Length: 319
Figure (cartoon, rainbow, N blue to C red):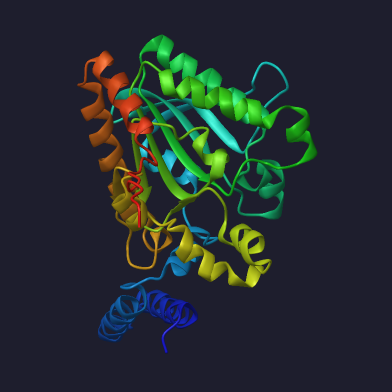
């Protein structure tokens, strides 16, 4: 049975042959082509029908592109702004100004770390109150200068430590929700990896919400849900299915507006292709929203979030 380890070994073998092929006097092109064809077939077999839990694993893959990778490839002239003017800076949330195909935009992005030191600096991508207050400061700058706001979401949730509680994490998230709800500029949010609870929603209450194909977006992690519902974290796979947290489910439910395609196996298999698709989607939605009159934009945003979770109850009849 094909698994990711088999694919990784085959990819390593192909890369080894490519290096040998570059040496004088060696022609391994036929063997490389044969192995690449085999790799494509195996990828199709493994990734064409992913389960919800498999998508969760891809969303958390350590080689998956993070926010800084997309900032470098999708945007230009990124100018970072730091600090909340009260407590200090939070490296889990990047904020600043950038250009999107020449258009000035305000940019918010949650950044995880790849090494132990980076994760220590960035709190594993879990934003603290000072990060959300910094984001609010940039939201207000966007409105002041009439800049569209773009958010890249990638967090398992807001940082849950004592420090966060002491600095009023709940209040910081609530203030951001209130600010984004009435922000008088177009807003686009993209879940690029994990979108966890209020930690994600605090920069995600946008006019258009997009997800990468293998991203996840939920009020709680599968492990957390399994621990609460069944007192057993080992049932996380079952919880992932019940939560309907993947992009196809959320698009069907009308909670997001679009799915950005990824290469087979996930964004880390070909970051350049993923970045190009992400850029195309963000540019499209920013341009479309920018054409709306402001009053119409705000009315549509209000209607969008008023309709989230709406249901129709059956009338009670006598039996």
